[in-house]
Length: 330
Image (cartoon, rainbow, N blue to C red; front, side, top):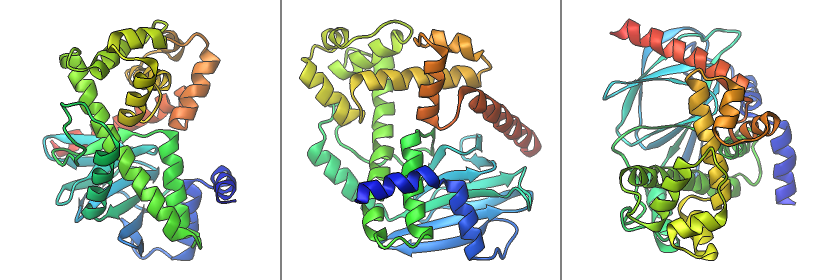
């Protein structure tokens, strides 16, 4: 019954609806970064609403801070010349002690800019790392699962992560009687996704530098070089020098998906980059290995929660805002 409950709630509730519900429950006191806080069992959820333009608003992370945009756009400014627009369907993770400043270029009383921030005790991250180190086999280059606090993590997350955030926020705002169970499972999954993203990025960098390091780096490099072509399991097994069962086991433990699902994810990830660069959607569809524009659009929406055309429009607007803000601060 618990699974069916989630399925029903997730088809009818999204983050925007939850933010509106939160505002109805607690009247805003501030126009900029009005904060509503929910806390339980070492996890703190903050929902921030901003109803007016503002610049250089400071945010400092006391613990691990996992942020997700709900509506509107922010422009984030951090160290090492980090200046980027933060839009819905993106994750932004700050390490303890990290500081950024934020601009709100398009917030208004009728269209507030809203985001969520999950403050997670660093001991919880260590627990997840320990669990992965016990159950997950890593290539020698990674040594062991560990948090990477060397830089900010800013990624466009998948629809699966978006629905996970919906489930977590809904358990807080909706006063779910099973909230503690939902949070325990949800936060563990969220941290696992974050760590796997970092591990995946490291493997990809190894594959770009020297694909012969391991069988996995060889397979990842092969996939990256052949996205526009037909890729099958037998070819990947030969490149990685692995049996089919071993190849599937390595992909599931290190990447979090099967090899062919990973191929599709990488095709869509490359498509997103090309579309953001202004390429035509139909041309991108064929360039990344899809044979049907309708299938490409359907898979893109499943992966990122919006169509290629919607993403192109949102990215262009977000990039324009970030460029304007960067020019102002220079």
